[in-house]
Length: 260
Image (tube, rainbow, N blue to C red; front, top):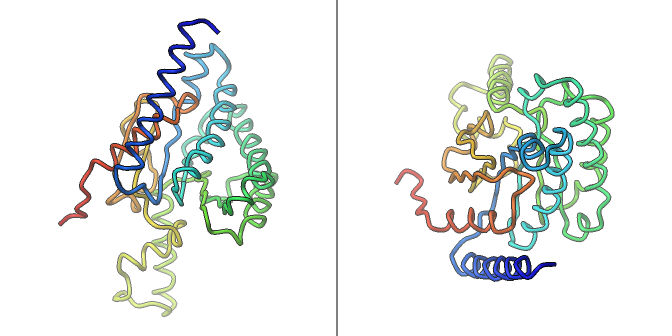
């Protein structure tokens, strides 16, 4: 290692320690962090001059790293946007690769010693009817192996679209009203929330999106009514611990009035 790299590494380490100290002393840590993991393909092209699938591989490894960071910070709920309903329009080879990568990742996380040591529950939300059988088996495997845990909740949005989720909730409620199981007067915010994929999860405190895009992209539209939003230019595979700490520090600096 060159002298300049040693100096840079030392400076980074000191900065990370300072950031961590500020976050530890800065106030409440988000209870529920939701992440739009964007930039895998651009990272592969621009940073590695490689095939897009290499970017997806790097992104999967980064997610595993992120979970470790969240364990250490005491964040109890992490929800990630892994694959949207719109992503099915990508080239078939890329979609197939992503489905296989998700399948392997679910088996991996379900069997990791750390998953069971930390008591992490793994769940997948989205339109499962659009997913291949082998991936559905992996989802069932991960969910069943971790269903009794509650210390940490990891939710993967897969084949997910918030508008579609809302439409499905409206249809479910409409059927209950039609069948006399519910009256129109019973419909309120809680009733509607109870019919979403996230019915047993708290709403996100902080939404983080990587890659420099400043939009929500059909992710948790109902649930983020009072969430704080944070956008960073860093591509997802290049996301660092200091980037997470910066996001949390920004969250802590905001006064959450909830409309008051």
